[in-house]
Length: 225
Image 1 (tube, rainbow, N blue to C red):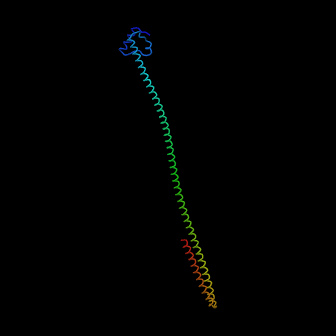
Image 2 (cartoon, one colour):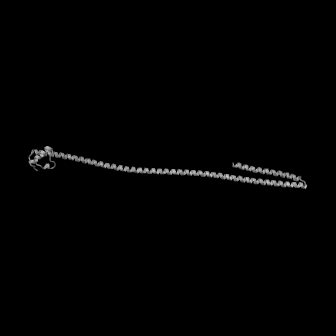
């Protein structure tokens, strides 16, 4: 492709004043048509175009490298975020589990305290029941002892009264027979001797009965103590 002189002159002036030249494949199809200055312009533009292409390629490679780096960083960041999310989930699970364990421990402690209180109450109730049973036993023993003593006193009184009645009855009868024999004027030597012996025997037996009863009472009281 050939250009007229005016176009060539404009391109050369533009390059000379502003360092702006043609770029791209169009430089390969332009014919300088023997113009050495324009041929230098084309050659310089080609070199400049190659340099620009090389720089753009390097920039493109750098951008791609940066993009790849950014992509890897993004993947690593996503991986780290996923690991962090999983760690947070595990941490939350651990916290929930710890909270549940604390609640279970608190519930077990409350149950243990409740059981201790119930056991203490049962122990106190058992002690109270034992004390009441012992008191009841003592009261029963005391009542039984009173009943036994009362029965013994009543029995002793009955025995003493019967013994005294017998002694008095025998003494009265013997004395009456002795007086009757005196009033009749019969021989009183035999009956008098008999009366004396009977009175002596009755008195001896009376004291013996009383002594035996008192000894039995004393022995029974001592055995209880």
